[in-house]
Image (cartoon, rainbow, N blue to C red; front, side):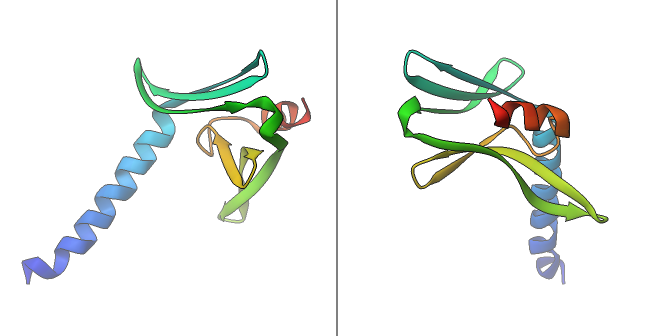
Length: 104
């Protein structure tokens, strides 16, 4: 009977990990000298980095990625070729901040 519950514990653990990670991640976008860089950190520990040519960025937009209790969850996405790069966790920026970034 205990083995039956293992997948549920694993799913719950992943949910908790993702929730804590989204709240703790800081993202930095840098565009200069014809290149872009997105760095994600938790504290001083770097957990993700994406780099590329700025000319490969075709658009920057605010996308609705889901709904919680009827409230849209938005995130800023940079489109680089066929890849959509997310700028930060879903709840890290206010809608006005997201729109400002996407308009630049």
